[in-house]
Amino acid sequence: MKRGTTVSVLGEEGQALERVLVTRSYRLAHKEATCLGCGLCADVCPLRAVELRAGVVAAGRLASRPRPELQADKCSFCGECVVVCPSRSLELTVDGQPRLLVVEGGAFPTLLAEIAADTSRCQTDCGLACRAACPVEAVSVQVAGEESAPERILAVTFDTDKCFYCGKCDAACPVDAIATARPYGGRVEVNDSLCPEGCHACADACPSRAIAVGEIVDDRRGDRPMGEAAEPRRGDRPMGEAAEPCRGDRPVAPTGDRLLVDERSCFYCGACARVCPVEGALAVKRAQVRHSEVKSAAWTAALAKILSPELQARELENRARRRTKEAALGLLGLK
Image 1 (cartoon, rainbow, N blue to C red):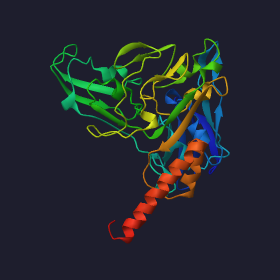
Image 2: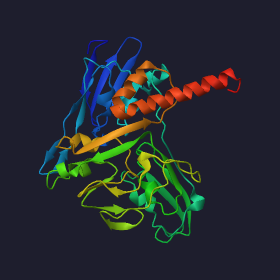
Image 3: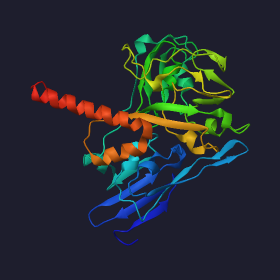
Image 4: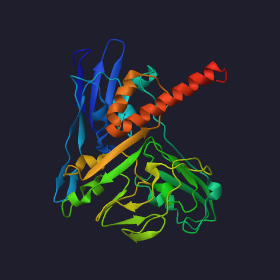
């Protein structure tokens, strides 16, 4: 390999780009096994160095997810794609160490996601519902006594390398002992009158099993026919804190005659919309991104790609309001 040239290599986990310089080496790796096929990486890349190959739907079922391909002749190893990936399926290393150069340089923020459990609220007769509900086996529960008949819940922990903060465990917990804060918020819009008969592609693609065709299993109330409302989830807030109304924290409700979306466990990755074979049948519209404070034209440009066009003005307005408030507090000497 010629020094300074970016090359594409295939490894056990998937594709990677590598560039070796005299004093530094770069590597951007993609993990196929955990990739959701959501396409956020391709959306945000300023150099179009990520191309999303379409998924395959056969006989109404998802045969293969969309797959990002990294373009060696375009990538600058900035790491923007790594920041927005909801499943952490992209990793940028510099000299073998994980780094996010675009964050270190102040051009991008860190996305904020949190999950915690208050075991003082846990009950022993829940059947370890949080662990059972997790679609990626990221929840571990330590008990006193036999697991089949625990005497006490000692600890509930979360593998943050696996967890994508969907809130499935939060919704399943019967005593509201888990609080989840997701990085993306928004809504899902469905017109299932356009859905092809027998198509389950969106449900197959959903990594948190938040979409069901025909009926859905409610983690709190068991099997429920479509059309019967569910109890609202507590929302993305610390335990014990009152929730503000949020479009992303709506109760389960039918979105059409045959398709139902449980937005309590949707984290708005958009994987479902990527595989929908009919335009207009399904849309994921992101309204907000939770992130650390940053003042950057690069991030403003990224938000224009991440957020839905009709909703992105709200996010920018909120950012402007926060800055105005901070400036006013500074002038008053209160900051």
